[in-house]
Image 1 (cartoon, rainbow, N blue to C red):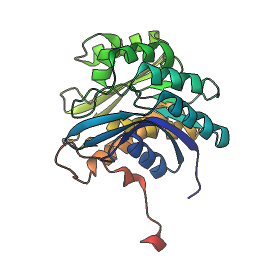
Image 2 (image 1 turned 180 degrees about the horizontal axis):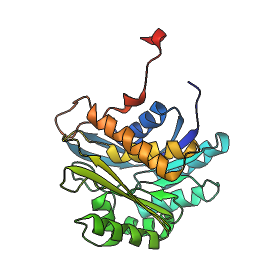
Image 3 (image 1 turned 90 degrees about the vertical axis):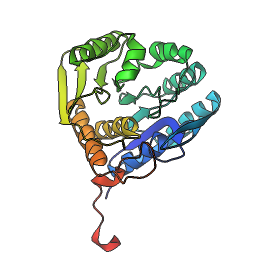
Length: 270
């Protein structure tokens, strides 16, 4: 398989392998692209929860970005866990030195088990410094509620929240509806000129660890290969749903999805 594009991932590490940098690398690789990384934090976690977060110094995060991009220029950039204002400012300043129109921001704030991964001042800095730089932001409902200060109960609320995020300067918003209690998933893609609702049957399982990280990385990969936004979101959602449906049932808590669902092994390697 020929490598299709190069992706820079700026995110935290997940020791259990289901989310964060590990999920991002698996996703980008499984979809045929080349993954580079700038690690923002090291987390101590498994499928049952997070017991520790070890931050990387903001200067070291910026240097990872700068040193990597000077050598191998990325076609797309995915941003995940940024845990402090200093880190967000450092990332924003580093990215300002490179031109890249395919930046996807996944505003990671709460782990699947409920642990808070970002502080209050960092949320304000995220709004001020990074949302405007992103081509697409991909919050879930709890993250969108934190960013917009509104309660989201239905599709109308989701659309309202997405509009508020557009007014913050986001170019496009994909608001994920997985936290709503229903038999169907509804994800809202909103831009200045268009709204698209992706509707899929919800798969009943607790093994959904890392779905947000995986989706944003999948969309970044498709965008970096030249696919339009709507198609990239559609393909990304399909990839995640197939990963959930074929999950390996690992762990005693919220288990990982199957990132290899897109790979067909060449006959000679079987």
